[in-house]
Length: 240
Ligand SMILES: Nc1ncnc2c1ncn2[C@@H]1O[C@H](COP(=O)(O)OP(=O)(O)OP(=O)(O)O)[C@@H](O)[C@H]1O
Ligand SMILES: [Mg+2]
Image 1: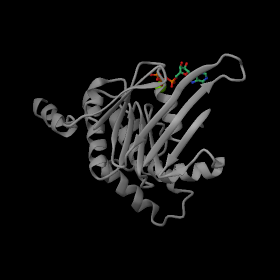
Image 2: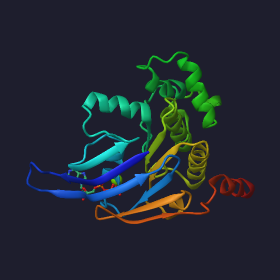
Image 3: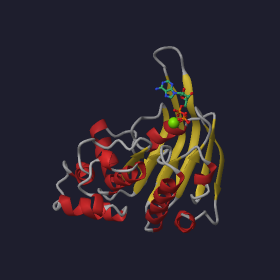
Image 4: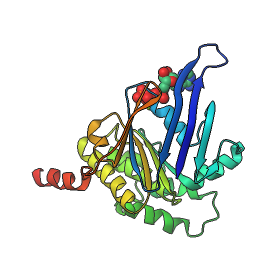
């Protein structure tokens, strides 16, 4: 699905204060992988995310998306490929305030030529079990519910890949399990998921863990039996 070859990212070339955030990174992400990217603050996780998400370009190296080299694309082509292929989820949700859950989810479709935008948005809200909150604005929703709306928005274009940067960073433990169980379900249905996290607990729920240290991949291993968020959620519900 994705292949990085010798990717290097250097910030601050112009100011003379150069920081090498990624150093010669080689990485293959297979279709259907569920990858957790972990590492200390400043190790290069967000830099990696921005490059994987085509939000930023590497200083050096090649990026292949389904065998096509994307660095040669012009910005507008890149934006098109990005919108079609990748759904983004952020730590701080980034929902429009004073705008209903439904309308937030519709946003990515507004400039598409898709028909039945309302139907597609409602379908995406169903996938995160929030169809009964469609008319609520973000301030009427809990943090976990807001993040689920953000996931619905990421899903509505039916991207192959979901990229999430600390999606549970602002959530309590129950909402974290709810969000993780949605990601696990999406992964089972075939989506490729790449998620950045500080927490080992979260990483254990992914099928593959990549540890970044000083801009390099220090570890890359697979979890044969990832922890099931939905099973853990049942235990929380029983104890409540
Ligand atoms: N725009 C920028 N200009 C200059 N240096 C930058 C820029 N963005 C990041 N850096 C530097 O690159 C390195 C990697 O940063 P990055 O944001 O990728 O880390 P991170 O692993 O996401 O950290 P955190 O866990 O704190 O979010 C850091 O040393 C950081 O200071
Ligand atoms: Mg970061």
